[in-house]
Image 1 (cartoon, rainbow, N blue to C red):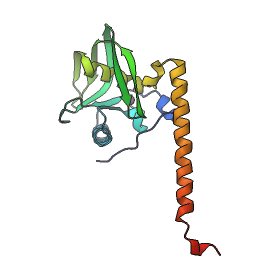
Image 2 (spheres, rainbow, N blue to C red; image 1 turned 120 degrees about the vertical axis):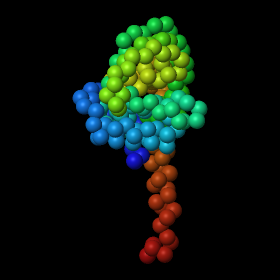
Image 3 (cartoon, rainbow, N blue to C red; image 1 turned 180 degrees about the vertical axis):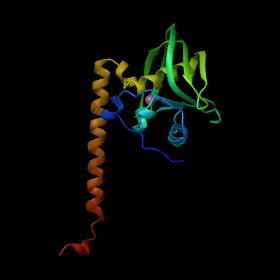
Image 4 (cartoon, rainbow, N blue to C red; image 1 turned 120 degrees about the horizontal axis):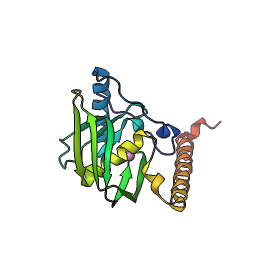
Length: 184
Ligand code: NI
């Protein structure tokens, strides 16, 4: 198993639309297991293949408290959306940012398992929110796309500033590491 690199906003690869999985095979199983390991390592409760630069319709979720109820969901399709619910969301691809998003409260959806079974479920609560968030990823959409343009702008500026800060601190580390006896 391996921990995969999670892409961060504003990486354009997060905007790619994932293709359906045509055949469940050992390669797909391996991707799903690596995604689960990555999700656990990063402390997330859901991860879509798009986030690890794999454009296939695979998502992994574990909303259990003890992190021992992994769900591997292939080719998910929402069949019905009902009601509305607002909740605070975050995302491994948008570190350190949380905001309120409105989504459907109840959803009916179907998906394929690693054993090639087709399952249809009606769900609500955190799992329903999570599935909607992850399916958005497979379609190249992020939860921050739901924010007002003003909030999104502020977030972009914040990330830009963070990057400049990181670059500056890296540069100063380089200077500090230069030993004085190298200056001739
Ligand atoms: Ni996410």
